[in-house]
Length: 441
Image (cartoon, rainbow, N blue to C red; front, side, top):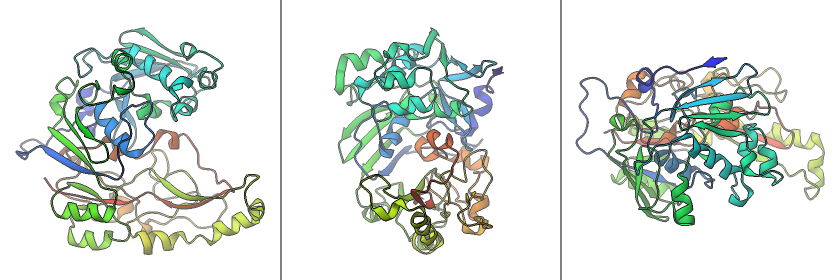
């Protein structure tokens, strides 16, 4: 079976690389192409194989690029790889890397860089908290390598030549292409990592293959990046400079946004209706792949009462999801009755399977879309969120300065790979996180 992507020219308008966009014909851009966004916590690491948090992912997606990216609906589109082939038995993926892809130091990005990074992720010596992700991808021998039973070199990923990467799976995995959009699978430059050791992610030392290069980083204060001239699609990267400011209090961050110090900020819980009325073209909400839930301790050390499935079900029935999303959060989030997000590509719009918890009920469209914002300089969606927020108009996609690829996380690959069966020890809560204010450019 052969599966190839459209040419880059045809898909460039779909927010293909991390920060590349195509302004509409005749559109006048602002003189100052800089952007300052909010970070809740300090960036602990910019190492793709060692990062574990959302803020780190935001930054890593600017500094590095994986085999594939995602379009506006979460479908895989070309990244470093221009396409891939899938064998008839659906166990072997062969990725074709674009020869124009370069590291920020000018070195070519080659298949061996991905081999090194994936082995590094699975290697117990790296102590990556995301080593399990390689197992979830069903890469052959991944579990044995992660457990230390086999050497990293036995992981079934191979560079056939500089521009051809072969990956063998232990079982057919239809969602595999979506998983290689995850930051933990991004390549790293072996020469730099081995030469600099733990300091290789510091400004002046970090070498990436993404749309931006790291210029400065004051831990817990700010992180600054500038456009990478070596990026293969640099011609379509509009923003020249981007900066993340760490502000641990969301309300303080909102104040700084209103003072003009931030161009994007998360909206505190319960304030979306007021801010949407006050700033109709800045307060936005779009799907964000996240499900919040209360987990019950059913281990041997947990409360005895929770070992009774009737008690666990009763707690789940008692959870007033509608009250939480409509009266507390007030941002268009949806009640959740399973793990799979309604916005995932391939799942029905505005419908959650309730898995028997509330027979006969479905989550209605009137409950709105869940959301987290993206940069949309011109106009926010204003109609029924269950309809409008499902897909952003192509015109707006072109106009968007596309500052954070992480803001396009419509579906984390590890979540997309799980069909959401209700687990008795989890009391599901609601879909998605907060909304955003985005300043018009």
